Length: 176
Image (cartoon, rainbow, N blue to C red; front, side, top):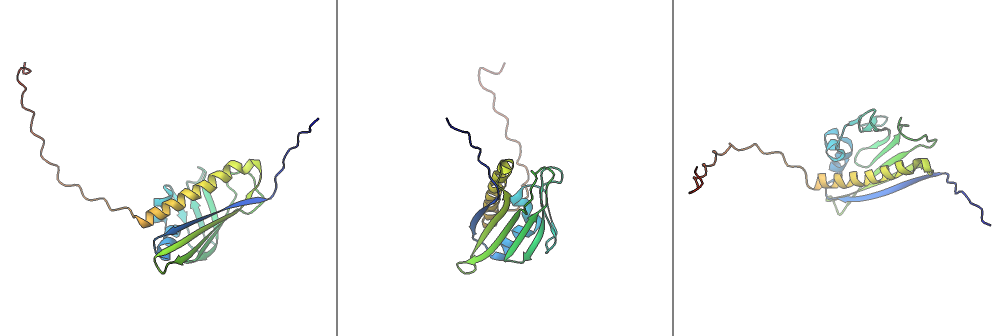
């Protein structure tokens, strides 16, 4: 006879991401704090009040955005976000935090960008949100890398339209 044992989980979990970007640390910092650059890698609405105590919002209000309080704003070194309880997120008693750490590698040419996320509840209710958040940041960091290493080129003005191509000559036997 076997008894069914339900596994209970408690506590919190986190994630860690590291990306090496061939760009000066100041440019990587701008990608995290300049709304124009943020829109490129995020691909949606962003709002930021870039200072300690400011607001950091990714996404549209009312459409599943993530909104955070900027706890630490140490230019070119560290940005720590403490997320506010979202209307669409499962209930949590823990503080959910993203901590971005920037370091120079190989002189002034490569920046290491680390993201340490923590405080996500370790329970079934949060499993999907945890996976979505963790994988989204993985994609966003890759987009930051591509955006900075291969910046979008300004669109070139279109050249004057070429003259219309000549009309096809009539085909023998088909000119009814």
